[in-house]
Image (cartoon, rainbow, N blue to C red; front, side, top):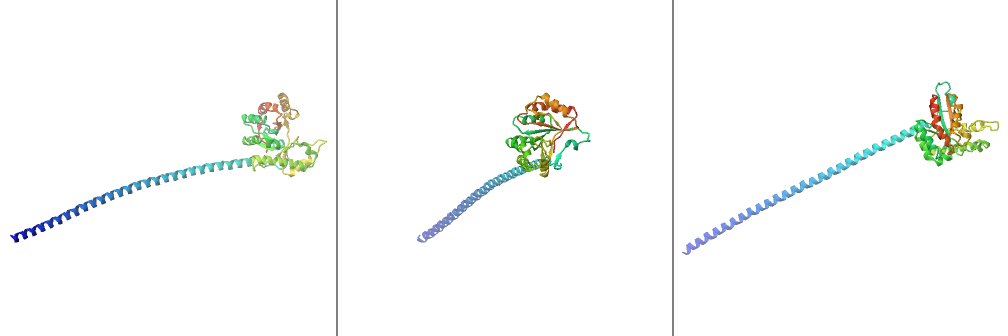
Length: 315
């Protein structure tokens, strides 16, 4: 009996040990499953994180690339716009240089003799003593309406006061020239060097408005460069010539210099009387007091056109 109990007890111990071993094995299996599941979850989560990070960075880089391309295109457009503006500015400067550089030699300039025998009928409309705030804009308006270019002989003092009108004259294709700075006749009784100083001062004023491209050196003497028995103009003409200026008088006029606001009919009668050559340089004024000159201008243009004249500018 005792032997049997011992045997049974041994079997029980063995069986219990086997159960214990099986439990440990199952636990290990379960534990491994849990570990593998956890690892799979970690891998999945890591993969998702990598995917979303890559997606985020891809969008960010694409956005940066688009921004760079946009900035590049914007810069390129701005560069092209700048280049176009620079090209336009250079073209305008070249045109001004061409318009305000003369081929005429220094000294007295007589277009009616230069054009003699050409068979052409040419009229040069010239306006002295401006610009003025009341009459010059009206003269410019009428010329623009008729698509005609003229030559304006500016007094330097007036040009300084009305720079905007000088700029408008240039912009609309007209010629601006020198009529001395002060328009003072006192210089004809003084040293010719003082007269040249006044001319140079006017030239500097015009250049400051038009630009350094201005090098026309075209002059009209106040009152003209005509000598009289009481006044010898030759020393002043020589001084202007030596200083590189070419100067022009006129061979036609409306007579508006003979008084303030002469009737339009008087101005037109004068024009008909003096218009005799195929080439005419017509003296008129756009000073503040010359209102009837403005009123007569459309008739002046019509009369010349009816008689076969075309219009040019002095240079």
